[in-house]
Length: 134
Image (cartoon, rainbow, N blue to C red):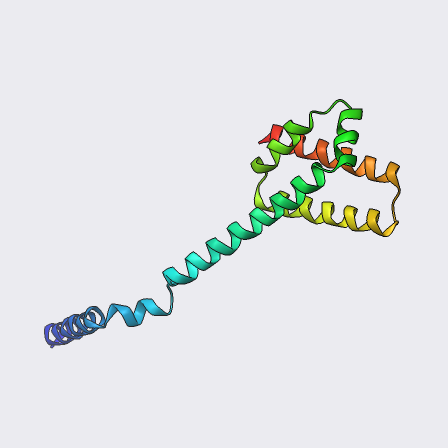
């Protein structure tokens, strides 16, 4: 009797395993896998955002005020501009936001030349420090 019960359990296990293996894998996989198109779209969006952030920071650093500010504290503007590409996405996004805010505040008259100079020097120093640490 024990042996018969063991065989029934064994047969049931084999049957259950067979059904699981025979199930279409595409049905199981569809709910857990991201489509290649979605991955490509996400990578493309991330790349575009990074390029836009690099452009914003480089535009800020290439302004006449920024060039004068960096030269006044003996920082090579080209070295700072080149270092922008070495920042990670989070650092770059943060600096792009700060650069945009500083430019808007300066254009609106909320900060003067001296404040802008301090912001520019701080951003340049931050870029160089981040790159040196990496």
